[in-house]
Image (cartoon, rainbow, N blue to C red):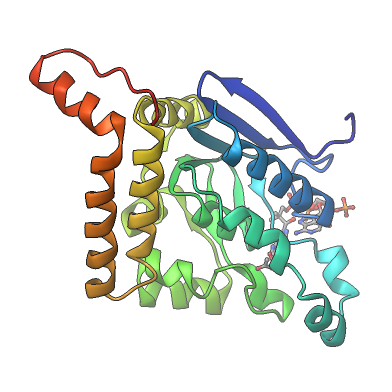
Length: 258
Ligand code: CAA
């Protein structure tokens, strides 16, 4: 589709999904978020993909929700339509590991989209921020919830209350992202991280992501119970037998993803 806002390229078991709006800043329009949710759902349920890289343009990962649409939004419409809820839910329920490759702006919904991903690789140009306050708005897709869990209260409050962004070095120091590389290498490095994930057993990867995600959603006791159950369940996998036997036989494992 020529006016598609999302493109898909395959690198073996890794799918590279790129936001490719006609505006290179990638505002998260209704069309873009709907297409993104559809593409991610298809990748999440196919048998070929084991990890997903989510990238923007070279200038901007995403500049946030569509301010043009929000300029006309009313309280009644937002509440009755449950504005943003369904589209963002579709993105946040992906079970396969997702690596964000961020160059340039990750603002508002752009920062929130990067935080939904499991790992964030950023280029030196990256800027992460929640500028909603400058628009008279509250962040609507995780800025007040995922950001403090990622960077702690003080920095999250500073970002949310001032609306000022942090750069890649500050994002790395605060734990918002896992690596900073040269902009020209961001997508390649993100793909390479995703490939080193994708060589493992898919059902085990799903369980590890689900359990690690619970660390941000449950009490420690509940999370540990969830983890123990996931650990016990992994003994039902053919891949568990293969992984342990391959180690003892000093050979690489050959996973069947069962
Ligand atoms: N929505 C809609 N259009 C946007 C946009 C957005 N989020 N961000 C940029 N644009 C548009 C601009 O209106 C402009 O359009 P025109 O050329 O038609 O005038 C075009 O993109 C280029 O923008 P700028 O001229 O502003 O580009 P710049 O290089 O000077 O600045 C920028 C880049 C710093 C990213 C700046 O565009 C900017 O601050 N954008 C808004 C960022 C923002 O506030 N995001 C949060 C949105 S609210 C949200 O995301 C809610 C939520 O939690 C989900």
